[in-house]
Amino acid sequence: MRKTFFTVLSLFTAVNVFAQDTTTKPEEEKKNPITFSGYVDTYFFGNFNSPKSKSNLGASGYERAFDQKVGQFQVGLAQTKMTYSTDKVDGVIDLTFGNHGDLGNYGNALGRVLVGGKEATGTALAIKQAYLTWKATDKLSITAGQWGTHIGYEVIDAPVNYNYSLSNLFNNGPFYHTGIKATVATSAKSSLTFGMVNGIDSKDDNNSKLGGILQFYVSPASGWNLYLNWIGSDEGVGAKSYYSLFDLTTSYQITEKFLLGVNAAYGTQDKLSWGGAALYAQASLTDKFGLGIRYEYFDNKSGIRALKNRAGDGTAVNSFTLTGNLIISDNLLFKPEFRLDSYAKSAAGMAQFEDKSGNFTKDSQSTFGGALIFKF
Image 1: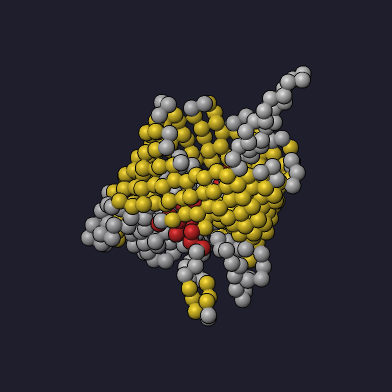
Image 2: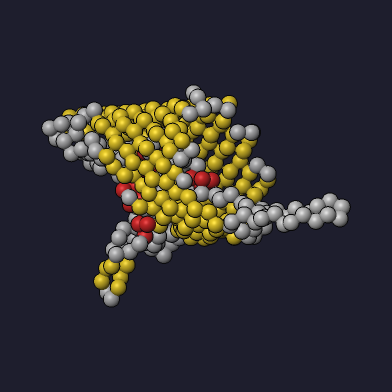
């Protein structure tokens, strides 16, 4: 998904204007290096299965990423982002709160801090990103801290994604990294990023072996962006458990009003594999309204990831999502959405989703609702 380039900050430089000949004009007022932005979203979704638990999570508890509750209003995420940018340094403090903030900080559970030998409440859940970038030269920058992952097409931020609900490719991570990375511009239309991180989705490393990340970006033509991504890390404690994930993310703005995107990923761990692919199509029908379609196939038949059936075996899912984007004002968006998730039938005959009586009798679920997003 396009996560890394959504976290790259714009560079603002003060411009000195000198008059021609002997007349000197006053220096142009410098722009404030500090910017403040954020958003809050709230949503309501209904489930056509009318599950007794009012949950979209199904048998394994991982059938949906963030929009987990149905038949009730929910606050998704509140974000406050502060940046400071100069010619040489960018600093970012990106804090999140709410249901999706907790889920997006997977691995940073509260109570990880020891005070006097006892666990105390930590603040890791509030930190979505906290990093600095040193722009060493025009072609080299170095970033250190915690930042959103470069893996995948989608990001945690609801105003940035076209669809509101998140894909299974996103849900299976990673979400963020803590470490150091360098980005080198290899040409006017390409760059290479590489670095070391504290494993997968954790501010702390669980062993003495750091993970590695790579990204190659290229723009083969105007409006076409392509990212080749990789992350690898030994996640074992006491025994080797090597995790590796390759990811392809690309989008092409075919016309001013029509975009196509593709995300494909293949991962392995302990010689077992998972993967999937998603196709995105987005069309602007008017200046204020557009439609986006996402089709995704995700395969975890090996059972190495968390998405499983009621028998505890690995499974696969086909998902179709139709999302509208209505611009109510410059700061307010409304995203109505329909989504269908259809799972492979279990060999043991156990269905994936519950019905209104609380019995698991359904192998698919359909949801419909919408999200209201305020951004600033």
